[in-house]
Structures are given as structure tokens and as C-alpha cells.
Length: 136
Image (cartoon, rainbow, N blue to C red; front, side):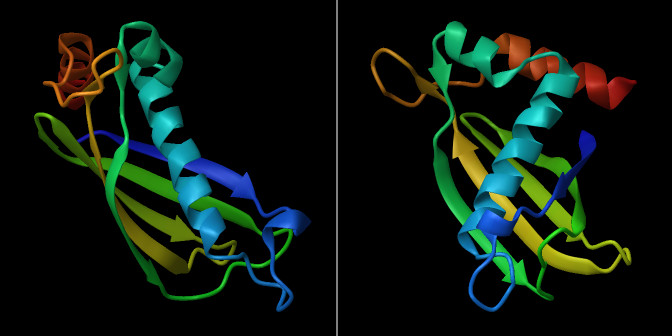
């Protein structure tokens, strides 16, 4: 399906006393990579919100393989794994500067109506953007 590659350099404030990236930051990295994928598709998250939708996380699953460290450039490969209205599933692979896989993740989100806060179907403009990316 749709794929996107995003890079991020580990900041000092994201590390713990051991010098490793604190586990809570992986969710932030993946969130940024996910919204950059949407931006690449032509539907930035701000546009999704402006159109009356939100995407809360339903579930997250991480597999920590190797530690990331301060000042390391990480590459995150993000893929839309499944679109099953109202849910959308993303898979992630994170690599260090030696191109070793250091983390794997899967995150499920659900589209909700911004006003009513109820689950809704995936908006047509998001479906179209994903379909167009798959075809090109």
C-alpha cells in the first residue's frame, strides 16, 4: 500500500539516564512519521481536522529490538497496512545509522466525527488520496 520514509535525529532531551531514547518517544516519532505520510498524500492532519474529523489511537504495539541513542539519525519507514473503515492501521520499521532495524510497531486509529465524538466512516478525500497513491 502507501509507504513513506521519514528521518529524525535523536535529541538529548529524548534520552534517559542510560543514554537511550526513552520508550515514550517512539510513539511521538511514529506519530510524526504518520502525519508526514498523510501530508505526502495531500491530506495534512490539519485538513482532516478542518473537515470535521479526528483520529484517536485505538491500539499501539511496539517491538524493541535495539536501543536508539542521542544524536543518532533514525529512519522510519511508515506503511498504511490496512484501511478498514472506520479504522486505519499503520506499520512502522525504524532503522539506525547502520541500517539495522531497531524497532517495529503497529498503530491502529479510528476516524471520529469532531463534533459528536462518534465513530464514522473514513472520509472520501482520505480514501481517494490513499487509492491514488496506490495506483501511482
